[in-house]
Image (cartoon, rainbow, N blue to C red; front, side):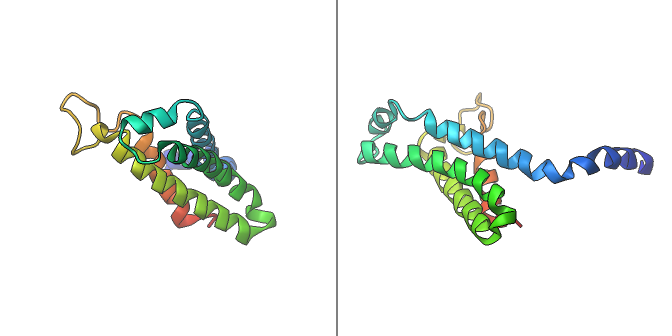
Length: 144
């Protein structure tokens, strides 16, 4: 087993510097695209769910998602040159993603949860829980 681990360590070591970027880019791009996809018709959906001020809420959520996605990536870009600012941007963006995803799970995806779903539904059949976890990760860790 030690030889096999050594083999995989040899493959992984040159890539370890980009491992965090795989998560950061995946989350940042996905969240930006989720927000961008809400630029048309999202207020109507929120109104149908009984959310107050659906136009204002849709605007805030749409731009919050796009800016948080950009912030996750920008925070990493600034990690070396302006480290404290990059760390703060990463944490704020991760926190925003976490908060948005909690509300998304409660409002839009409540039938996908462990306690809310039908028996024939797959537990969190989408990446929603993954986005919540990654956002929370970056809110806690920042760039450290």
